[in-house]
Amino acid sequence: MALLTRECDYGVRTIRALADGEKKTVGEICKIEDIPFQYTYKISKKLEHAGLLRSLRGRGGGYQLAKSLDTFTLFDIVIAIDERLFLNECLDKNKPCPRHTGDDPCAVHLELERLQNLLIAELQSKTIQEVMSQEIEVPIAPESDAEEPSIVAAV
Image 1 (cartoon, rainbow, N blue to C red):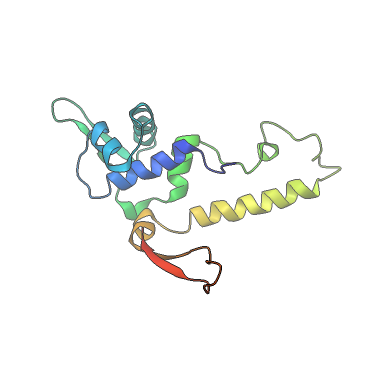
Image 2: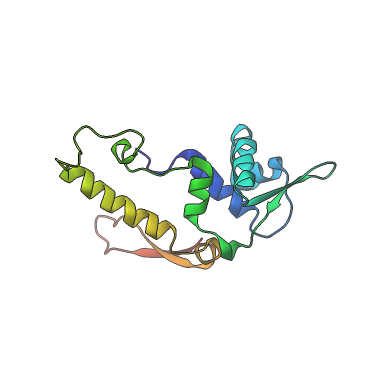
């Protein structure tokens, strides 16, 4: 089960491909980030509609960032692609959960709502510039005889 959709992943990767500020064609974005062509055009349109990308038309056209990387977050990309983020369908107010009512609140619903709020806060906590410039310790599963090693990977 994936929490974020494949399109959200491709949206983040599209932004990463354009992070240098240069204009790139859909084909170049696909090649840089290994994204299937059929997704990239659709995702680029969504990111453009959200004001994150700018479309350059005509000969030599393509896409480039419309905003500085220090002005938007992972959450902005997710919302541009999927419009809403729910851990579970029952959290969507447009699809009321019959087990969670004002008179009879559901403990599971309340916990999922709490976790969703934490996730949203974390997705909003760093700009894309901060995310892309940080180094993260990525734990590696320990080998049978080895201690718990970790590596540092640049994002």
